[in-house]
Length: 460
Image (cartoon, rainbow, N blue to C red):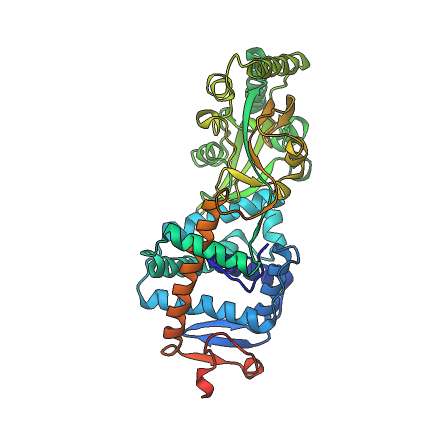
């Protein structure tokens, strides 16, 4: 990893992200606010923010980035300066942009912690509404910062000659970056589906439970405990509490829940998790208090063996060049997200097709680490959180080992670094000009710091 001293916009974006993680961490750790470090325009940086963000940098760089309190404060002041002038320059941030980021963040952390309840507890909020409100404030500021950066750098481009000069400059100073091992993967997926008879059995069972509750007065809660395959049912008897249209539940579930009247039980319906029935207990304002029973059709060992054999057959045909991997994916793969793009797996963290080998999920890393370019894994079993069972093979589409940057082979990456450096220099020049006409009040504890920019102008 390149040293922190040679900052690029990538570093700046990291710190923008840290505003999100740091503020949430403050809630999780119940940090006591201990004073204001600096005021930039109408924005503040707290004393406690500095340690918080330093720790984030240390964690996310795996200890490879060292930064002092003064350096961190200057980075945070830079962010606040951008946010302040974004408002002055009328950078537009829409509610839909904020909501999209908030919902994606909530979705990501819900998946990480396993449920909304656990996530809310982990981050120290009283409710999902409180957490969303705080996230909305943070993400609005992040969008303002990003918008101001984009506005300042939208016309900047870079020529091949500038890329060459940038690369040679790093080489002369012995500062060429080391690029980590990266891979590009593609998958072929065949699902093991339950038989028609088994699916009909599950639907009939749910209808039977529905009738027993509605007509015979049976306890929905007890029926859930006895029959539901929802892993949380032992604790809550199928009761999911109050959900809203913003709650991170699957679309099909919310559509059914909000179509019911109080006391009504839904017809059986399908989701990625299996088949459900829902009981609507009460309508509470914009929320619905609901319970559900989930049942998943069983898949026989014979069906699993048959699916594995089909994948093995396709793999053999690919290796014998009877069909290409891409053709097999398009014709046979049953994964909707990758079927039409040659099976290419997208990195959910970067949105790109490449993966840093050492930053992958350990299980996936174990399956592909020893593959060379063009090699395919043996068929292996996988299962979704919703209980869908499948067999897969994964192709190593491309692979580059850890290496020091080369101008020809890594031209695109070097070009991106050079462009980022040029944009950073533009923003630095803008910052130096804007500091002079922006209100800045620095706490006396930090007046001893040596900054790159004239943040202490008030003392002159």
